[in-house]
Length: 176
Image 1: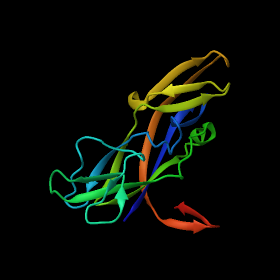
Image 2: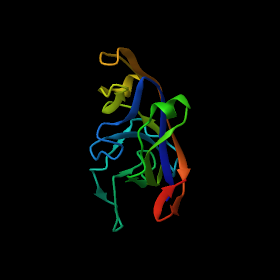
Image 3: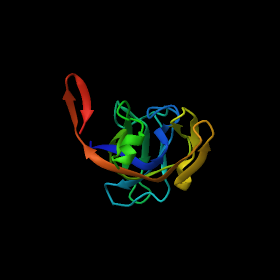
Image 4: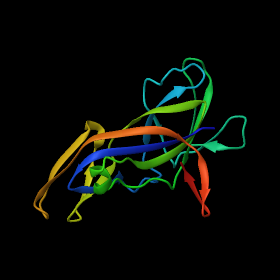
């Protein structure tokens, strides 16, 4: 059961705290993923939406997952379980340093996430504290902050997955 950490970065201009509306663990935020079947290697043509608020029983198991589906090519089954509590907003300091920030951890069986598709439902704050609703589907955002009298914007959002391992540090679970 591999664990995958989804991290993201973007170029922020006078914005900070970029994250899904309601936070990284918002139960109603849909993470749109392209998944690769571990059986035949095929990648889903359409993005699959995974949400914390949606759970289903895993067939032939006592467990649950946020997504259970079969590969359309080989019919092999798989599941995706989201592990909340590890995401953080992207700050202006991280953006300037070109450092990614963690968004969500996924436990995958039978599938491997290969792409995250940015969409709407994001927020960020300007230096003056103005909160902006952002649709990242187009890949950029530009506005003018009247309170701070400066342009605000975002460009070049990037997401990546990496395999991580569950570890315990001082009584806390971390994924490295």
